[in-house]
Amino acid sequence: MGLFDTPGEEEGGEEKPAEEKKLKSEIESVAQKYKQKIDEHMEITGAAEPSADGEMVSRDYQSFREEYVETNQSWYEKCCAKSEKILKIKPDPAKIEEYQEAIKIAHLKVTIEGVYSFAVLVPIAVALGGSLITFAIFQSLFFIFFFLVVGAAIMKPLQNIPFYLANGWRMKASNQMVLCIFYVVTYMRHTSNLELAIAFASEHLAPPLSLDLKKVFWDVETGKYESIKESLDAYLMTWKKWDPEFIEAFHLVESSLYEGDEARRLEMLDKSLSVILDGTYEKMLHYAQNLKSPVMMLHMLGVILPILGLVILPLMVSFV
Image (cartoon, rainbow, N blue to C red; front, top):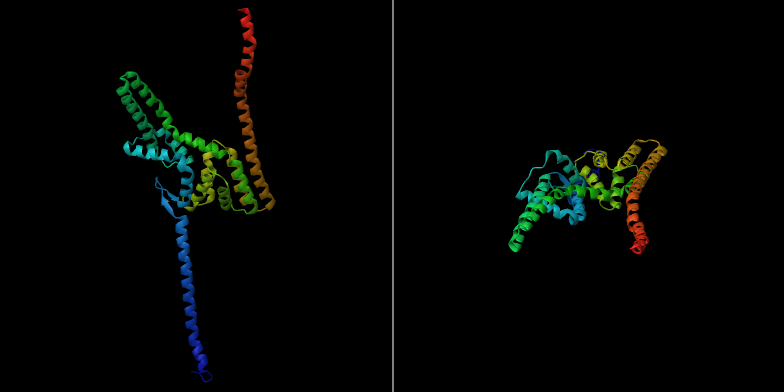
């Protein structure tokens, strides 16, 4: 104890470290409490679970997919899964890549073996069931031959169901591409952030393109791709043969991220809109030209031919 130290100052010096230690422990407890709440929230909203093919799929994407796809395609997925358990058939190696692309585009939770198994078991069931039932009723070999032909005829269409679903998905999504680019460009003009722009477009678009964009977004969240650009490029490759203007428009949007000049950046965004609009206009012109011949044929058969019949028929009657 010093000569000029007072008892109050000594007690205050001893109490000060205790108060600081108490305050520090309270801060740590509060931080731990909120950290636990954040972890619980992240587990609820963004946890991942394994899908049928072993990949990690976000629960948010999974629930969104089931909301749109379940009513349209779940029956087919269930039938393929059951058929694969009954009889597993190996697919043609030359067509594996085509089937994988179609399954990916249509967001189907099936395997190629399941598709082939379903395409074989259903014709067999139709041929055997139809033949036995009709033979027991009519005692005729004609119906046996008829159902055998029917079973053989439906095998190929059943194998092509993934392609039919992928084409239907592609046609519906292609109608929303202009609006998709518009939403992305609108957000990018305000905030130059590609990830947030894709999330904005996925929230405001209707299925099926919104599901594609949400899949791109969650592929990054689940670690399948390292960046949103890598995930987006992988998705755009599926449109390479069908809509190159859509790919070019998105590449222009991506290029605008690297422009330092604000005027140049906005110009590239406007150009991406022009590209998708011009491409859509050209497709509409080709579509209208392709419709010209069928419309003329219908006009000839439905209008001109009946009028000619009304003119020629009285002349024929007068000569008779």
